[in-house]
Length: 326
Image (cartoon, rainbow, N blue to C red; front, side, top):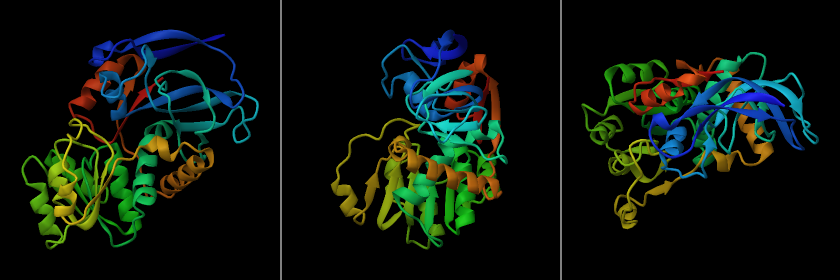
């Protein structure tokens, strides 16, 4: 048996509930691999789980993505070998660790041109952009998107993906500096929602028409005004709730505002099947290797400094992607 350093929590709460524990890790069973991890990604879903917004059976390890080297392969695993450099975004949580045995289905072999730190920083966020742009509402060149939190990890990937695809992306952020970052990464326009009515500004930028799609990970604070940004029969994709859950609302509002559509997808529904997950990852890897999408790692923390990392994320003091180094 080998010992792993693992971040767990035993009760929901603030960052202070996170603690480092040593656990024994054995051999992979059928369909599993053991990965010696070098870096783990940090995402807002981790905060939802830790705080109890997404309840979990406790105690539980935390973390949804990481990258490292395959140490051992269980029976039936054919797409990975010992020594492969790999990355993944996968459920159940447990990625905040330096060694892990897990299902191999969502583990993807990294191309030579992508380092492990980048692999850890890009999987959940990059695959999220892939399903937003290609699987939820298949977008095409010339379409217009409003993307909230455009200077975050998902947002900066989305800005670049949109630019590479000929899609006009209007981003929002909470500071002028973050707006400038979104513009540098390919946003066509950026709105500081602390200083401007973003819905009114979107109408100005689209000559009154509205956007084809709103992609919103903020939730309660932006939901109602996001509906006002859409063209008739436009789509609101609500894929997170950083400001709190969207409260119940009258479905009739969607009809009154122009037969609007709304959906609440999750990444893990899209990557549940092995083949689909690998195909989505291949497209993401292609975008990164081509240079069309560059992954900005804005913050790095040690595994033992995870509570501070969570505090910075909750304070919206981060830009780009954040990782834990193992």
